[in-house]
Length: 269
Image (cartoon, rainbow, N blue to C red; front, top):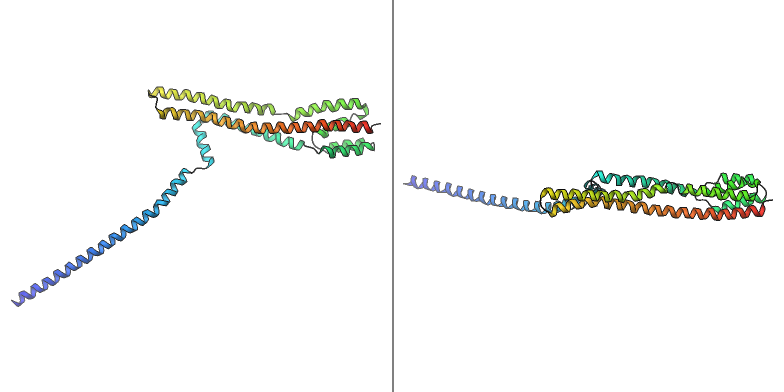
């Protein structure tokens, strides 16, 4: 009988020990699960701002990327002529601006040097001064000094004639710049008309006036006009600047020529 009670006691103790072990494992497992859940939530909270920042970075595109996308959407066949108008037009604009800046002369200083030489009868020195001075004004004065021996009337004719030649040189390539100003929006409008025809063809194929088809086709069609107008505006601004610069140089040439003739009349013998 005692052995039975002893066996039952041992079995009860073993059962109780196993139950406590299972309970402990369940508690430990539950705590581990809660810890993993907390770490996952924290990771998700930390990942959310990163994902938002990445999405914001994708939405924020550089001007170059946007311009490239719009160029592709407008169609290379119609956007390329507009781009070529901008490239060739700006090349001519830069050439004219550099030429006109180099043609600018300090007329007062040049006239003072010519007067000092002519006063002493040193016409060769005055001609050398004109040769060493760049710009159309100096070239005109040189042509006049080169004909001093033929009389003041011939000098005046030479100054007037060569002044017209220099004015034509100042206005060189302006016709081509004006052509590109006119061509850029013309290519844009032509691309828009063709794009609208294609949009109506898409509507005809679809058999329904879908807002998506109409809006997409119209957007692509109008992109060529937008770029054409932008190119024309840019070139027109520089064109007007060049005209203003030419007018300033022409005024210098006219005023300088009058002062130059006054010097010759005063000191020529």
